[in-house]
Amino acid sequence: MTFDSNVQFRVALGRNIGTTSQVSDSELTSFLSDVVSARFQGFAVTQGFGYWQGKPEASVFIDIISEDTAETRNSLSLIAAEYNTRFSQDCVLVTRQHIGANFASLRLSEAIAA
Image (cartoon, rainbow, N blue to C red):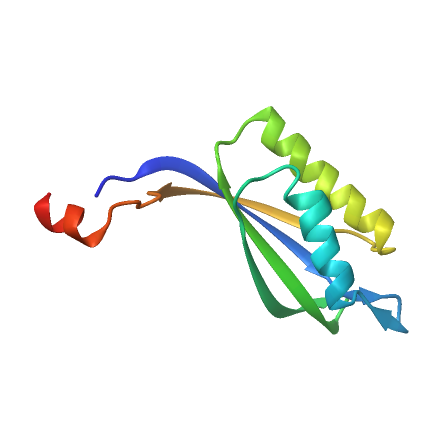
């Protein structure tokens, strides 16, 4: 198996809205479907827990593996801006890490033959 040089972007979304409510599961699903899927064909979503300004909050992490292009960075900026606007957030954290990736598509019989 070989690995291509790619970049993994992680988008961290806090689910608190102020101190009185949270982004609901249905609101999050709509956001992922309408905003993220419109810009990236594949990504992983992990539910988690984070801290913002010393206070805990439920969080969602979106991992996207892509080439590091101006178009990719612009799409990430638009995703963050839309989340900030839609859910009254102070900010969205976006990180970038260089990785080796392989989207393995072989079936078992093909892998054994190789």
